[in-house]
Image (cartoon, rainbow, N blue to C red; front, side, top):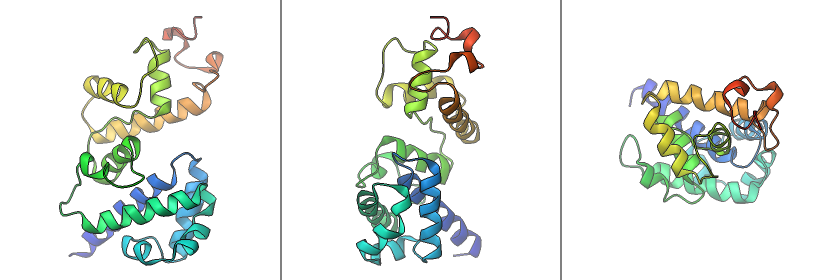
Length: 192
């Protein structure tokens, strides 16, 4: 395998591991855990499948829920080594312990450049508040609905995901800050 392919494969795995570590935590904690894995020489599927779970837990402690995430990282690593195709299907990713819809979609979008809309909590909240839906929805409905009207372009969808998440952190929080929102003129929530 050419060096570029090895580097690309390693980068994909690091992104996937980051998606697991970022579950239910701030990205800063996930980043610290990724750096700790890298420093310990554990940021590869081969290393993670062989490392003692107690050592792994201590290494990824900054990501929170480290006992659960250690199990998930080991499951991801074992599956990663067993993938028989270049790009795993969403269905295949969802069979891996600890990989739910959002993590699977993040892996497909950011690791493999597949055009997938990430229907995370920020996206669901934003779509509900701007009137895209009348009532709260689970993960799939917003993902499919938004995915059907947005361009099927991975770079666009990755940028949209980042912007929606930033908007959710600054303005469209659980308790919205409508006065600060750039969408307030067109948002039914802001007009209430």
